[in-house]
Image 1 (cartoon, rainbow, N blue to C red):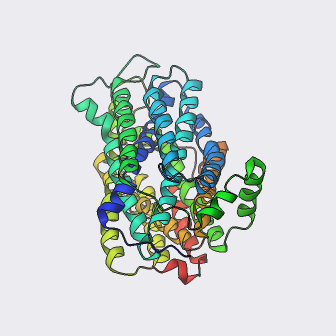
Image 2 (image 1 turned 120 degrees about the horizontal axis):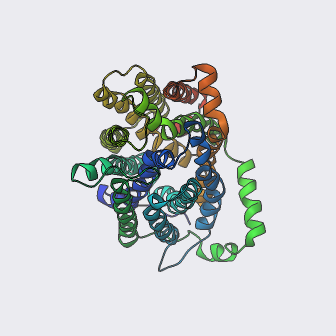
Image 3 (image 1 turned 90 degrees about the vertical axis):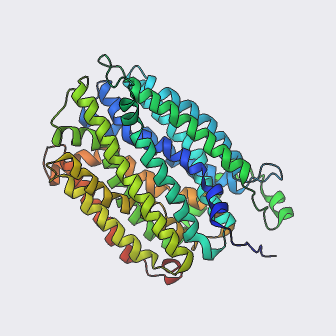
Length: 439
């Protein structure tokens, strides 16, 4: 018997996605300030991507496994995805709070590893929950609402160290010590992360499996059988998923480049500072976080516009994603030509358009092309196309490509990010299946 899913109101979709606010607090603080932490602890600019490698490596392992396990979990009291929300929230909160207290590079890299693994435990079930709860006609709308919440989280979290400095929290410290402004920001992020995920757990119900008796007979297959099924799903992934994988590869290579190099590139190229213990550097790094917050704010506004249109009109997901990614690529390239810091807001406005689309359109297209009973594992597998490019980038891909194509200056990383994002946009032209590209 096929389950008939009722359409949900905006606020019902908001509640079920609200945990993403905290998840994005974690990702924004990680993405905006871990390179600053690494530099403060003595990392050379060229070693920064390698220090990030634990995060995508963890995602490569955790996401498919968590997706598979959540597909095969059901409790009348706790649901299917919500147990994973809670476990991930507890671990992420602890890791996020203690990350800026690292006293050495190895400790900071380890904190990033634990943080990313923990966030992934919560994040992938959130993606699957949208497909679980919403009828096909509301899929784009649901992912866009998630993007709206992610945009809010990115904007606020990216500005937290800057705000801490403005209210008088010290923004400098002894060489090799993380400033209090960063420590306070991570502590606030930890609180928001846990409380927002708990809010979703308390306000959202889940549908039971369609055939509960069959589900009970199949769910305890054991580790070996589960591993075989994951690998079988990887080898048999739908054609559309492979095509979207190419788009994702270029997209996330570009954003990993930004997260790794935005702070050293912009503080050096735009602000002209490199001494990580100086007040000038720490103020510039706060400002970089502020400019990065712009792409979160714009993604929120863009998501609001998309939420309106997707709730009322049909859209061409492919062309929307293509144009958004090309706009973001132009934004990255424009950073190279900035001569006044305020102009970075314009660059990151274009990046925010791309970010909003990356967080919604690929998932809306994917959810329309896979078996609903395997939504969790396929969402996890799909994120291999997020973590693999980051691993390639961290193992030297960024350093090799930007120096080969553009030259040695670190600001050239932003040119590389722009080129990759434009290639990501054009890769959408491979997708021909109108059943997934049209809402």
